[in-house]
Image 1: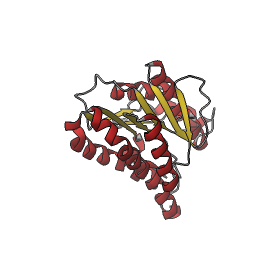
Image 2: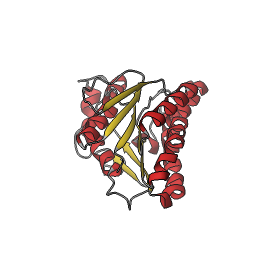
Image 3: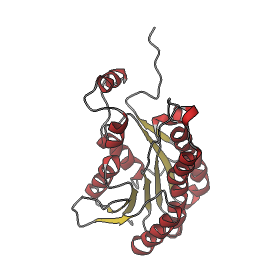
Length: 240
């Protein structure tokens, strides 16, 4: 079994936790991010790239495929670009389409020949609970929701080749990106944690364990699925 995984956005937050978890499972891991990973491990490699740049991503994918031939792709990289509808910029929408959707297509297209040759592949896309809707997230929610349809389509197209495609949808998770929107230690953070059915915010490790489940070679009968790692916030609640 070729246990080589590529993880986008692997230098920080959820992506870093995913890299660490996969390394612990014996994977060779390649992080694709704007900066080199700080993880010190003989099986960890970094490719520095701005994944919102389509041309640069294409070059990075070519390097990834030639050097490592990964059969596991974890597309985690993302940004929010929050704005209420009157302030939404189409340039932001275009950027998130390229990063959340276009980058995933480029990565999987690049890895597909190696996956098909081995009749094995795992694709895990990191969406968000925000795909169900969240104020100020027009561009983010739209592109993260797009991942769900894309994954379901790929699951059908690739199943006969031994390739599974699934989605992990986190939120709310305590990361730097989360704290760009919510001030650490603030009343807003405490209120948000109290509103989560399990009464806490998520940690990066919660998401990494879900990714590990879908990436596991033994998870071969599971494809086209979405797993919300969100403390129950995707279920919806109405206090009566």
